[in-house]
Length: 551
Image (cartoon, rainbow, N blue to C red; front, side, top):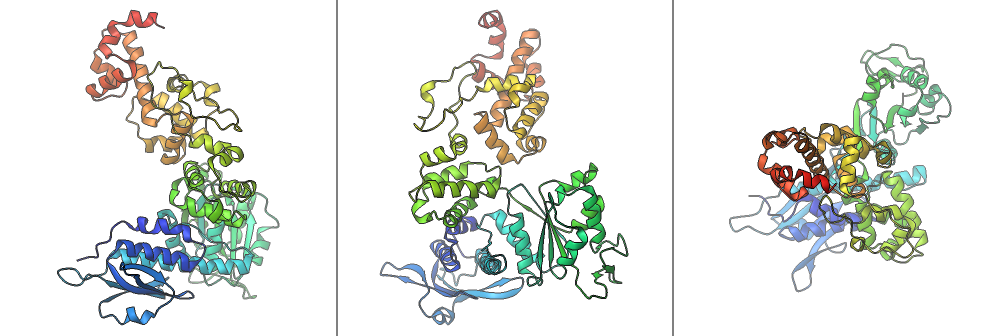
């Protein structure tokens, strides 16, 4: 049998992530939540460079708590203790020894979730080791913060990629942690004591030959490689030690050995490892002739995508707390549930860069007081506008009720009243450029696509690909900018076209009208029509003169 644990790994990890400020606090919170969900009677956890946490009885009520005091040998000596090793890159860094309740039909076996928690402990131990290394090396305690599934996948990538010499290509939107991940790959690998040379692709100083020479024995990080000129791209690829044998004698001094690995010339210098970052889709750019295909071929070995903040809601709270502490906001005093809720509702188009700026501003302007809704409205008003709840659905011809809007803060600028959904229906069908120009670019593309392809079986995933934004962000844009959902607007477009068809040809069967606007189910079409128009398609057609008179 397996260990009965209440909750998933995410439910154990996410609440603990806010305790990131010290490794013992973070591990202690993590294990405490495991103890709340698993039938544990005791145990201990030992972690290299941290010491031992002991799971002990908490008073007469029999509860369990983690403490740094106590003898770990008590748990280790228990004959029924389950031993779960904690490793990183196949190297032992600690272990858990847990005493589980005996099941009615025999002893409980260790569950996969215990190994998942142990694996996460190994990742966290490495993050803090890299943090200490970065503070010595760069003067800044760089560390990835959060325990979302996406960030755990980056931990796994880092574990495997750091000890390889292959080039790395990191992709992600503006403001994501690409540079931080590049530094962590260097800091976790065998070259950590060698140079780390970062080149700004938009405005690089020096020439590629100089970069490779300075980075010899270490890492060359090409930040924003997509912004480099075609000439520079061609020079870089000529200086790189080719993993593919594209050339046999590179001008930078590296030669290809019989094994296919590049080696230095008589100087004996070791060639640098290359890590590149980009905000663009380099494969598409290469197909369009806007990026060097030979360079992409040499970079495209180990690849990872750093996800945007809008796809990592579980990481928002620890990131906000970290930013508050960095900027003197004393998170224990200034963090509020209102602030966290608003931050989770915001889409963060500039990701961590924007979050850092906003939280720094709030930390300073709040004067050390708890940061409330009004503070965010005053100092970051676009966040409050985006986080306001959508208005309740209305009929197609209804007029917005001025009393139904939330009361505005007295210090706030007037918030423009959103246009009714039927306005966006007309914009989508007529491609009203003036109105569409005011929308987010992805939302504008989505509306044009809906106006042209409304009769097709469109899904949110397909629409997001056409708009070049993620499905979650596109859904957010529909709610906040149009005050409706993707499906709601698509339904309105279809019913609007159905009314036009009914008026143009009064003899056309209702079934054919439904199919012409994208409804394969007649019953669904009739229900949707009645809900939006107030009468059935047949009634609407019979009453057309009256409807026309009503305008």
